[in-house]
Every structure is written in structure tokens, then in C-alpha cells.
Image 1 (tube, rainbow, N blue to C red):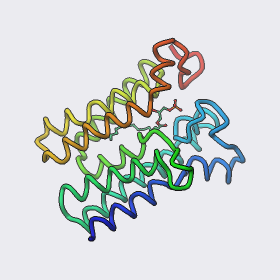
Image 2 (cartoon, rainbow, N blue to C red):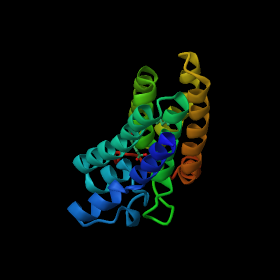
Image 3 (spheres, rainbow, N blue to C red):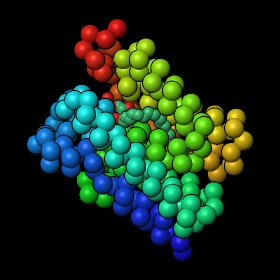
Image 4 (cartoon, rainbow, N blue to C red):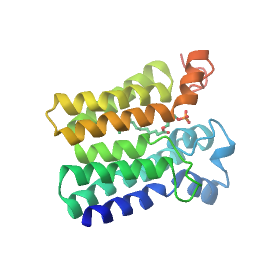
Length: 197
Ligand code: NKO
């Protein structure tokens, strides 16, 4: 029962569209009408600037981290943590408040894995940073970083539930980047800094 409660709270928490709410509230901008049309931290950074981008990242990250914390406290099993994390990511991408639309699950996913497996999460973040610095493409960094999650969960000896979570979450996040993948392949994906090479 407690596990169900944790999942329910995680889904509602994950559903809170920080990018949309704070973009409108503080900067009077609907992120869905600018840049990549995504409500995530990258599009907030691209459209509104560094500070707003960082704020949205932090808030979306917290949704994932708090959800897994609740899974740990209420459910206290590997499965409860995993399910709370899944519900937070699905909430973010298929929001209760946006007719089941939403973001790509990257910042929320990072919040989830920081709580579940801190060392792999740090490695995943550093790889993301490296790919983004080298290529200029945030989406490429997110796709590669997500694919690394199940591999590291396995390498670091985490339980099967965590490895299963990694496979599911990576697949979900990569699918959410389908439009980015199309643009990367056709050379039309926008880089995070104009003129970045
Ligand atoms: O606007 O389509 P866009 O170019 O914005 O955005 C593409 C982008 C969407 O994601 C975001 C969130 C950015 C957060 C940055 C820090 C996170 C770095 C770590 C990634 C780890 C992912 C692992 C998730 C595992 C479940 O991609």
C-alpha cells in the first residue's frame, strides 16, 4: 500500500511542469512556443538564459530525487525505489496537467539515479558534460548518458531491479528524443551555443 502511495505522489510530483509554470510566471514566456518547443532545462537555457535554465534543471532534478526518497522511506525495497523513479519520469513526460504531454525526462532521470546509484550517476553526468562540451549538442549528450545508465548499474553490481530500470528509462528517454535524433541525422539540430564547433 505504501509503495502505491509513493508511486502516486511521484507521478503527481513528476507531473509538475516547472519549465512551463516558471517560464510563464517569471519571464512571461511559453517554452512550448520557442526553440525546440520542449519544456525542459535545455530549452529554458536556450530561450531564457543560463539562470532560468539552471533553475528549471534544479526543480526538475528535485522531482526525481524526492520521488526516490519517498520510495525509500515508504516502500523500502529496491522495487519501490525503482517504481517511484519510473513514475516521476513518466509524470514529467506524460504530465497529468498537460494532457499527458511533457518533457524528455533527463533532469528528472538524473535526480532519480543520484538517489539510486550515486557513483554511476556522477559518471553519467560527467559523460553528459563531456559530450555536450565536445559536440555542442545537449540532446546527443542526454542520449549517450541515458544509454550508459543500465551498463553502469550492471557493472557496479546493483540489483536486477535497478538494471531493469536503467534499460527501461534509457529506452524511454531515447524515444522521447526522436525528433532530436531526426535533426541530428539531418544536421539541423541546434547547438547550445551559437557558433559552437
Ligand atoms: O530542448 O530538445 P532540447 O534540445 O533539457 O533538449 C534536449 C535535452 C532535454 O533534456 C533537458 C534536461 C537537461 C538536464 C541537464 C543535466 C542532466 C545531465 C545528466 C543526464 C543523465 C541522464 C540519465 C537519466 C537516466 C534515467 O536532452
